[in-house]
Length: 64
Image (cartoon, rainbow, N blue to C red; front, top):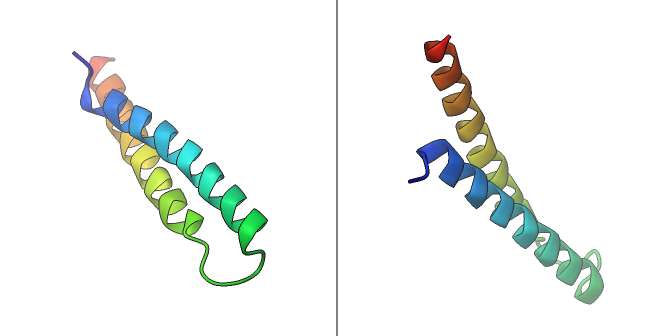
């Protein structure tokens, strides 16, 4: 079974792909117009990766 930090890393990778797709669509269809929702998924991606990194580092420091 995957640990929580591994699940968060997978979620972060999925959000990374979604961010690129949304940004590509926005730049292609509405360049410079309106709010780019890729910012929302990008921030969520950074949060997921950050929490995963902190959890993984904390687990590794306990193991040492």
